[in-house]
Length: 292
Ligand SMILES: NCCCN[C@H]1CC[C@H](N)CC1
Image 1: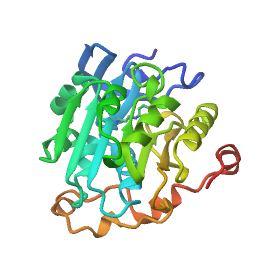
Image 2 (image 1 turned 60 degrees about the vertical axis):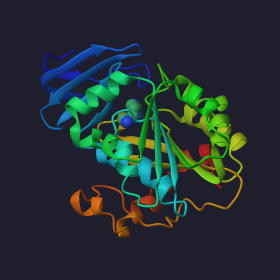
Image 3 (image 1 turned 90 degrees about the horizontal axis):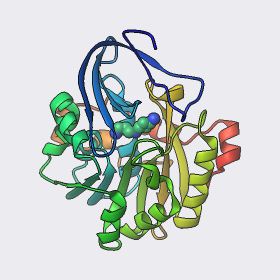
Image 4 (image 1 turned 135 degrees about the vertical axis):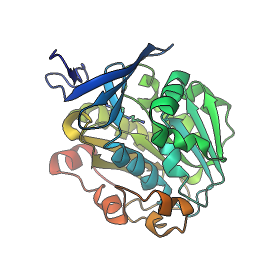
């Protein structure tokens, strides 16, 4: 370890470790589920770390939060009911609240410390919790879905950490089956789906579980996030049987919504071209994932 630097060392990405120069550690804690740390970096703003894995930095969180949210929400007409599993930093909530058609935003985050720490150190991200449509549940997303009514949600967003630790169950078929049950016909789920450079075997397992579970379309999209391992992150976009969803052509371009939020805080990353482009895969990934 180099003094003054945070190195993201993990068995999830052996032999490599993205590093950020640390100015000051602002918070260190241990919740019921994981180690939580916040530090001020020299060039990426404040950084949130869970069990040694970078969850977000102020400088590039826009790419992840905007893509994971607007890829699903701009793929269905008039989304009204949205569920976020994970997402305790509030960034996805902030992005969902841009959509004026949305009436109800449920969130189920397992670790209350993540919510508290985000509100204290990342107010620009935790602002998502202020939206009156948001209903917060602190608990396990699997249990939440077991208790939620069938066919309730238009969109489910699974904004999870990595499949090591509290999020492990969120990458397996039984969880996807609970998500499919909670979605309306033609409803859409978007999940955090790791890196095509680092996790092809994991992604292939996720894709095959999703193909067995979601009888609409199953697509993989990806984008660039400099501070995530290998500098990219992917998303599974799946729809249940019902009205067809064409993920590659956004039907409700968010940029054109007359929401007052847009004027106050314009999108930094997502637009319709990036939406369509995010489903284009390099040859090795297309061969492994396929597309339909
Ligand atoms: N809501 C914060 C983002 C959580 N997703 C991250 C994706 C990349 C992982 N290595 C760490 C979590």
